[in-house]
Length: 363
Image (cartoon, rainbow, N blue to C red; front, side, top):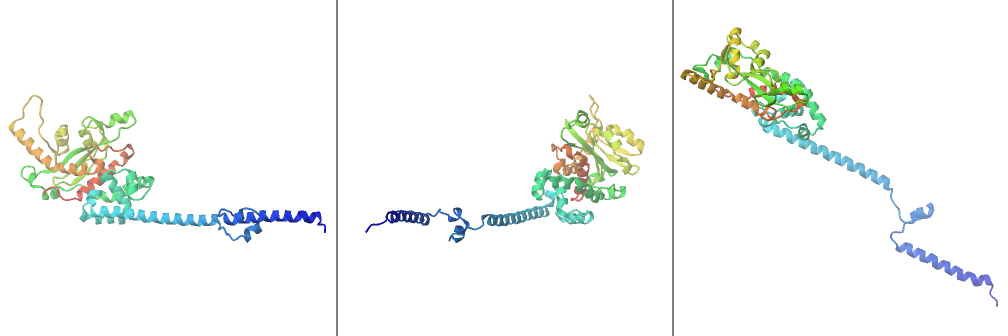
């Protein structure tokens, strides 16, 4: 029996195809990396036992959850950081803002009278007391750099309106009632002590400003203030700031200080105000200061004794200046940035108001 040629060829060809198909299927099942969904039609993908999830949807949901968790954690950390700063100030307000702990309730009065948030008031007072940079204050109160600086520049005028009544002239009768023992014997007529306070500033960019603010006494650029305080250590007058080149005499004449005094008041000063004696006597005031020392002439015994007595009194009241120097912005060699010069008047008035709330210097 003859076998047709097509049947003789077909079995061999079909077997060859079968072997190739089996070989391909075995490789696919054994290879883990084989992904039928990536090759072939959509029918093959749907019938495949491997179901690949939607990666874009899962990734977006996960990222949103992570972002929300991070934001919540940041808010918690910021809240804890702010609470830590507020608690540190409340536990030791004299260190951070220059106010005694027993008078910390006055901060809440500031909040009620000004409507400024508590943390903003504390930021302004910390800037004056510790002289921190705005970057450091922003970290302490969880603010941006621009927010911290804007708060200081915008809120300080409102704060000083509430604190300014703590700096006021006192009557002669009230001063004599609270006169310290060191003044009662020979100098009971003294009603105020005057002195000049110079604050070092950054060197101005303009040459004319450099010349006007140059102080021959400090050998640097300064802003000068006239400060008056009672014998028991209360500040009763603070002038506006003047360029450091101005003399003490011109500063007193331009500051309108004499308008705050009662007729016949006795002013205690140092030798720097020697040219004011005639001027004050014409105005009806008495200037008490150490005797001048002419060149080549020795002082008499009476003048030496008077110089020592007045010097001892001035040392006694120099602690007022020392208290002001405890504020970082008013410290010696603490250079104030040129951008803050316009705020310096408010800062020194705030410092004077705060030291008037501290304990008495002398009894």
